[in-house]
Length: 122
Image (cartoon, rainbow, N blue to C red; front, side):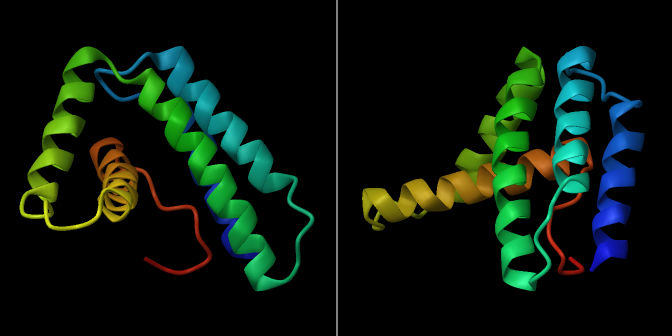
């Protein structure tokens, strides 16, 4: 587990130095560095506890990365998510909201070429 956490931490630090086109470079870098620091300071040792900490770090990272997007990338992300949500109208609003949130996180990671913060190899 420690090697996977260290690998994620290092990757985030590397990516922080290579901002993507269409993002606010300062916000992008700061978001990734903060997530890397959070991962590096985790005290959890049990798998489930580590996964919970990673999920919290990813939620905070998502919010910060979303704020770093320029207008063009923000629109592209919204369009991707809306296309993926097509046909989900029959779902309850709560279920559709959870699905939208998960899809937005996934598509943001894909758009920016970033990994999911998890111990699982995905």
